[in-house]
Image (cartoon, rainbow, N blue to C red; front, top):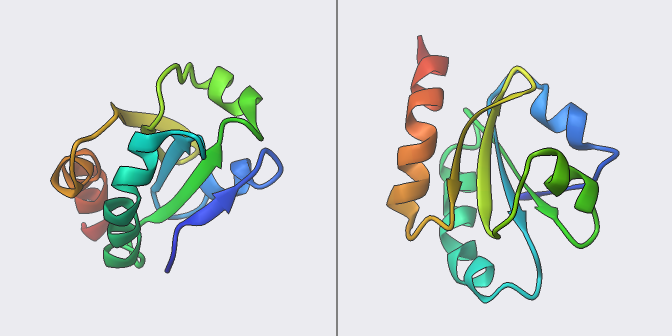
Length: 110
């Protein structure tokens, strides 16, 4: 599965599903967001059966960024049962993204 584009209208459905959700708050003008995009896409593919992965463009949905106090992009937030349970600001690599999600994905296997 690829990275899903999330809007304020689809946000609640995305984070409230049966799987944990990894959401990237990003902006198209953000160089670093573009730099980690391939790693973020690989995580989406690798964990597709265990994790919903999506992106929120903060320029399109600034109210969502404000609601979750996102001040730096990219910021990744893990949601479980509709609630934020973990986050990472500007992760440097795919390994850092996996470190963030590992405990939540592991919980799903049990």
